[in-house]
Length: 139
Image (cartoon, rainbow, N blue to C red):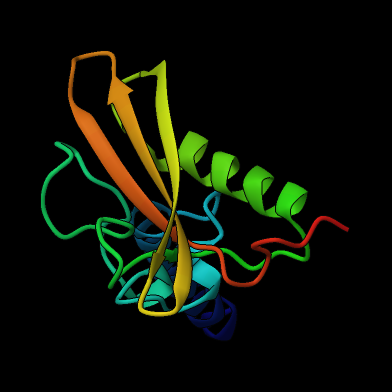
């Protein structure tokens, strides 16, 4: 009987530890954005906050240096991934308005899409996406 009780206690401890790990991961990893798959300037599984709460600061996508890298085979897939990422990460805690500005920019021999989004509280958030993998590819 003692062996069964000891085994049950060990299982209970393991479940508590596993549950704690799941809670930590759920609160610190943004699985919807896909950014946890790649380490991009401190983002992803080991990184911190992937978005801006005020549109200022050094957050993922805030500049050319920490642009969000989109891996896609063509323009259609790339733009779809950009809009999906923005839908999951822009204006967190606020609703994005339809005011969305996009610009294609060449910088240091790479291509970037720059999005400026106005949130419903008036904050503007800017995001840069590195689009080298799909820029100019239509098929």
